[in-house]
Amino acid sequence: MPPTDPKGVAGPKSIAEALSFWSEPVTAEPLGGGLTNANFLVRQRGERFVVRIGDDIPRHQVMRFNERAASLAAHAVGLSPRVLHDEPGVLVVAFVDGQVLTPETIREEKRLERIVELIRLCHSKMIEHLRGPLLMFWPFHILRDYAATLREGKSRFASKLPRLMMAAARLERRIGPIEVVFCHNDLLAGNLIDDGKRLWLIDWDYAGFNSPLFDLANLASNNGFTPALEERLLALYFGHPADPDLFGRFRAMCATSLLREAMWGMVSELHSKLAIDYVAYAKEHLAKFETAFAELELPEG
Image 1: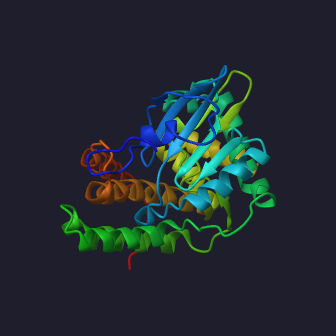
Image 2 (image 1 turned 90 degrees about the vertical axis):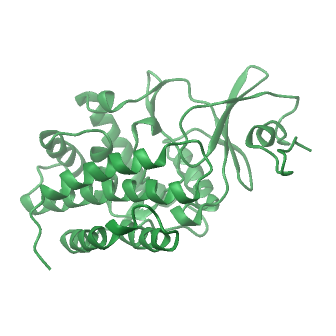
């Protein structure tokens, strides 16, 4: 049995080291990143593995059966490393030795072209390999659910909710009917790795059916794209320059992505036990949302 904390609950490091997958005693080394998981590097017989420890997080629409299915499909189409072992709350994947991207490296023209190819592969090919029940990641449902959680928890941000939800409703109307594809939904720079030969897209916690515009907007809003680079992103993905309506819907989705990040931080402050400054995260993304929202031309009502 793995060692336990004072309350009798096994810690993530102990869980990672006690997996039946290992053929000999191992040491789990903490890895950085991971806003919804505890991640560890484990070495065994000359190989390296990543162990992801995390329970379901219904408040964030994170369910590990969904992450497992997406991870398996992502490997099948060549997006992600192989899943080697899984059990409730645990996923062991092959280690990728490479450069974790930054917003600056994502914005490089040649690398952006390669990233768009990954996104297109996710949207077009993963459905052929997905199995079992899966989630839909509709940001406006998530925002409404977050608002209810924040009201119930008497969040410090509760007074802002009426205005934020009115803004969300206007954004949802502006985006309008959508095409539905399978998306990653968490295109932070830290989820992209360049091993020198190819790019990898990792961490499928938030994967689910969604509009392709969300992945594109999420990539742009998380990584400091200029309007010119946003136009380039859309042209690369769609194969032609975006018309004013498409670009307007995309910019509305950028604001939506920022609002979801902000409210994710608000909810995490109430319920997460990870040592992260969620208040600062929420305030940073809320400020970015306010700027993006103010720049939009949206109909009233």
